[in-house]
Amino acid sequence: MPDGIADAIRGARSILLASHVRPDGDALGSLLAFYHALRLLGKEVTAYCRDKIPSVYGFLPGSDRIVHNLDFTDAFDTVVLLDCSELSRVGDEAEMLKSIGTMIVIDHHLSNDGDTPLSLIDRKASSTGEILVRLFDKLGITMTKEIAVNLYTAVVTDTGSFRYSNTTRDTFILAARLVEAGVEPWKISEQVYESKPLPALKLLALALETMTLELEGRMASIVVTQDMLVEAGALSEHTEGLIDAARSVEGVLIAVFYYEMPDGTYKISLRSKGSVDVERLAKKFGGGGHLNASACRARGDLAEIRERVRIAAVEILERTGDIS
Ligand code: 5GP
Ligand code: MN
Image (tube, rainbow, N blue to C red; front, side, top):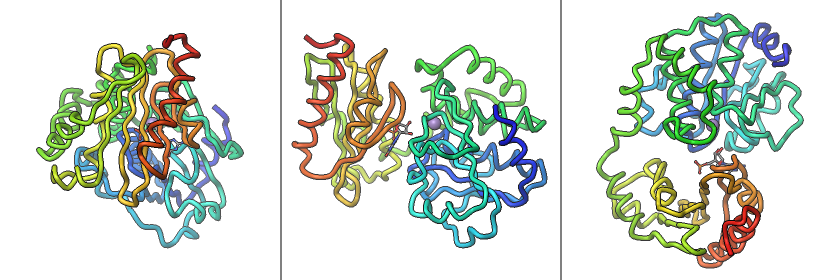
């Protein structure tokens, strides 16, 4: 780890922490773990996320401290971007953040911006949370329960409960350390996975109705429209995890989730199994992510978008010899 980052944190007075829009468990867990850690160091700290916190993450210690609007960026001497593969993922305030003196990037995506000197990026880490711990250790931060609960949530959500290929020996060693610090894994699993409101499950039912299999059963797709949200009485945050149903089908190597955004454009989430590279697929549409979990956006007619994705998926499957 470059010493510069720990030094920059030690020297900072007022720090802005920012994570990405449509926050997930890693975005929020990392944001809040760092928030508590910096408070322990006596720093002035503001945790920012543009979007509302999904209700399943309301239990995270400190979640009520997250702010959703930023007016006074000039009050900060340092900004830390967490789990953001590109600055624009912070949302509308991204450009304003550039005026802050020192920028630090901590992430397990390869940053597309690439030119931030103070970057702590490890593509092999399970989550941004897992990388943060290394910095905390360097800074001599005590692993409090508040920090541990946030970090555990970051790790458990980004590894799909320790199921995905980003789960390593280091991940389990960290999990054990977090349990030692007071985390009760079952409680976090219940909060994150078994505390959904009924409309979220109604939405799942509607989404399952749209599931189609293509490419010799190698690709499963589901669609959620704004009309379906209304019918289920669900919120946008309830789309998180729906794609797992598509990936869970036997023989499926690529799962695609088309989500019609309120502005009529589509967010396309992609998941894969094994060495099938959906990051490559997402990049063709200007997005990114990881080998097995990526996303991108597209606008236009859904049937045309689906055809473009199908063509790109064939190419991806041909690379691994998974389609004849
Ligand atoms: P999800 O489908 O859960 O929203 O995102 C899956 C992965 O793709 C995550 O690792 C996330 O960081 C990345 N991702 C999501 N949206 C975008 C995007 O608009 N651009 C890029 N480059 N990556 C994204
Ligand atoms: Mn992450």
